[in-house]
Length: 343
Image (tube, rainbow, N blue to C red):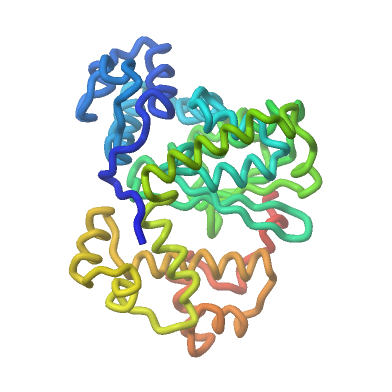
């Protein structure tokens, strides 16, 4: 198994980072100060050859947040984010057949379009639910990127379908002091202090045709994106691959040693690689269990016995205790995902 790490330099500086740089420049932020500590200069970016690591990109975001010092920065960045001007990757989004295909491609080609946050799609009988998972440890920049990415999806769908979709949002963080920016850019179907962060839209909107549906150009663009991923030798991050592996093995006893073996590395090397991401094995195992438990409870409607079995717990008491630690509440306190009282 392989995948990119926080220090892997592959993000084209003139694509996603340049959108943020241009936003800052439009507000008269000096590029020298904006790029301080990022390991490159503005002259490097405009060559079209410079590449950033996730760590460098996060430093750029931190600098932009500090220098812009405005509550709308993440939302304005999101408005500009997709489809953007990223060559073949942008064509894949702009000329998708419909919203569902665009979201699927966003996930499939996330190394090109969303290298820091992984979009995770879940469908039930009435809704599509879009979760966001960290592809790399992001620390204090997590909220900025969540706000930007969710705004980007809303803006892309509205732009392509020529209508405002009835998105519903749940956020794991408390209501911020600038909630009016959420109203302006996302709508008013908002709930805060929830077990997870997720945006949902009725399934009836997923397959409405987009203007570029069925174009030859999107087929060519997809080949170009596939070729780029083939050159890199991976499609997702190391943490993405670990999360997927853990989800597939949760019914079995799991240990760092066993998982390290599956990744063809020693436990010590595996532990060091996790540490470089700012995380550790138990944290990642807890995240995988939490994510699956929330999906099974809120989307599938499973009971404690079924969830305990799926997660490899021997009894419901241990499951409830662990779930309380992961989410701050008991399973009995959850509501169906699209039916929360605040929505």
